Image (tube, rainbow over all chains, first blue to last red; front, top):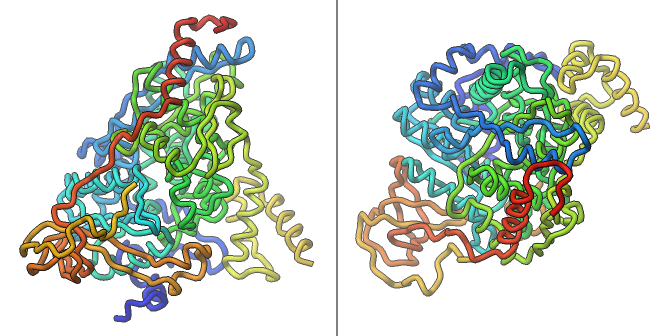
Length: 473
Length: 118
């Protein structure tokens, strides 16, 4: 079969069907929408089944730790009577060192049950190690495809460390230079091996994260007699937030505010060779968080199970300097040395806690492992050697790719709200464009779907559609 | 910041026995054949790939070879390294981290009573 770029991309749907063993067309309505809940039910696993699978493979039941010293510090910089109790779910205690083990356990279990001999995942993040670890436990082969180097052959230290970790679990690691054609290489490998596509975005993966929301709701209620008032989720592809929110709802914590947090990398292009090593965060940033919120189906499956705007109450950004600072504070004040990417939601929570009353509870729902390459020191050293200026001051004065500004005092850590209405409008516009429905009548079923997609009513969707039509005129 | 491709310091011309664990490098898409949506700086460079495996036949560093990967796949590319390992570390000293630590220690020593100043 032809292996050139266009030929492989043209076989995409066929390869995917084989590699996931799911016929997505069964959920399609023919228009913009599809039956999301039917797709999620189609996994055939109830939440209790997933908890049992994860528990069999050592995943989940991670500690929920009260950040007494960080809470006290937040109160010091908060108005009188403000400063919610900050709790952290220490997900680094999972077998591969992050919450991604939850996603991987379910996907690998399903792949094995379906008779696949191996699993493949395209990821430069913690998910690779999670899939590799679960494949080792469950006895499947594993290939991880990573974007690692720029055109000078210089790798992001954090990603090189993740390659090492995948290999430590026995996985084959394919490393590439910058570019979205990673997906092309991924398709070639799926076709060649016949392995399962352990995508981050299948219903199996997202169902795996539901246990995280469920557990933290149960743990908070058992210890404090109530559900959390807010949960902060680092947002990139949207699966962390989607799964956690669904788990909270399943536990009965439907009043808990679900807050997304991303590192602000605005101005940096994610597919740019020249800017690749100017980033000090390789995930959890706005370069993924924004586009995946607006258009979830840009992922590596026909329909993504991660649909964050369906569940998001609020979306904030924090800066690189604020996250590095909080990562260090977590080690120095709470005795937990963890990786920087896992502290994005902690930096946001430290700011949001100061808006909330003292008797409120805010939960940071993840931490990640740390080690050589993947740690505040090598990441900042790498930034400095790539010409990024490091200094103290107001973190908001940063220019991503040029400077990292640490807060001159903890009170300077201030999450910035993203205009959710703008994202909702973009979601509607993108969905219409992607399905070629511009200047066509959008049926009531699609309007209902779009309303669910952006968590608004049908009147809202209709008025956005009208204003988009007027803009076009 | 090390270049991960073949460089002259890495023993070009060194003979590597069959069955050795090696790392190879290959261009997947040449510059000019990149996906249309990528930015210009990326369009102008090739998409490159690195993979590790067992060397199928004895070869010299710098030659095009075949390897068998951990999952039993065949891959081909330029032989760049025998016995590849990891060189990432904790980086050089970053004075700003020490400054953050000092700031946090002062906060801790000042106690958690609200209104306390440094």
